Length: 405
Image (cartoon, rainbow, N blue to C red; front, side):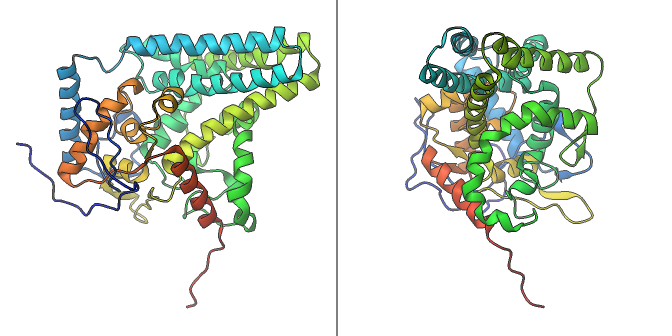
């Protein structure tokens, strides 16, 4: 029998009722609240901020997940289901683009196709690029690299994403000045550790609009700014060189040719700009909401390192579970569209497992958390996650009241 950790106090359920995972489906909707562990992956480790080295729970959890894959006779990557899904998404993306640029004649047709293209763009990011970027798509590095570079096709940089998301975010989730994914600059306050500004009192209203601008800013500003300054947010990173730099440049050229060059041959600049903004806004809102519902909600923790020591007391995996929230785990259509990222807990604990396996992995994670007294965060529905994000924005938008000394 594995040695158990000391039991911790479980936090309150986020859901109105809990149900144990059925062995046949591994799709439970039960949810305790706050804590768990996993050894931090060496490729996302930074000596400047460390976690507790007590990884007993994670070792046991990993053994159980590996055993489940062996029992089921499945590989963690190179899934036929994932290859088929990739083909479907890329076909939809291509058809929507071709129809929008070459065949749409009426405004309503172009708007509808722009929305479809925006959803397909987000689908490329959520599914194909995301698994490839985390090396969760295949056992072969070149396949992972190809899939990751679909982000370059739709306007981002797979190289910068690897630093910003794969390293900084996945290691230090919700740690201010370390996780650049929660840094909106002066536009929003997502963490209690970030400074408050007077306009934040309305952020629960205006940020929903700004989310639609995030992809446009990413396309036209963020990646170039990061390359020029050598920083992502406040953190330095290694600028691309050699083949990585060539891929960055060629990716940007390919994107600008697809987004503006080809369409401008057939349409006026005003028409191209309108439907580019529409497509990018749809993709931006989808990308932003999935991230925010996983980390920027009331139940998620925003840990603060010990001052001076740059150390967090919790093991890395406990940190992941305290800062990450699943949502709408039973919604298969949503899960298909967003690459299983409604199973954010499972993704953060096992980023190198293909997302098509998250429902099965989640059962092992929840059962192990229950046994070890480790809490697990979840919102039962998509709407509940949205509502929690709204309340959190409103709460952080209130002026900070300082106690008199």
